[in-house]
Image (cartoon, rainbow, N blue to C red; front, side, top):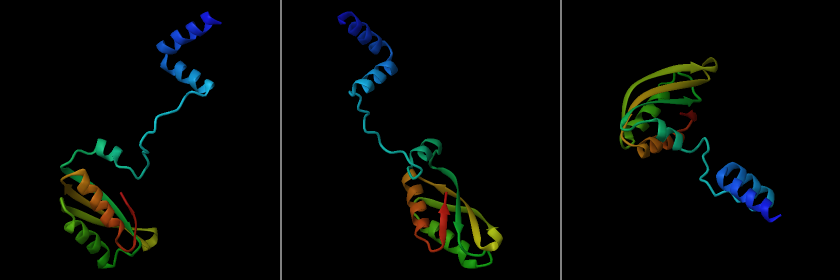
Length: 131
């Protein structure tokens, strides 16, 4: 048995995956506590988007596109956000005019400014999605 355990120990040292499996089988494996990475996290967007730079934002509002307040509330909120400069925008009716998609191109200074702008958009009445 001494030889077998020495051989297993050698294999565990050489093959990390095998070592983890053996620890799990013996009840010794305790995965480290990792930070949750959910769809609400910003890690992916921070890795993919270089800031300062241009960012396309899409906001879906429960209101008809004919209502001038739809785009205006979204644009005014973004204009008031720190580190955000609003550029071109467009409106697109969805689901027979019950919803409106507001596409906005913005120049954003930092990832913190981007997150703050998205959080601000989430507080607007009628906003159902923002990405």
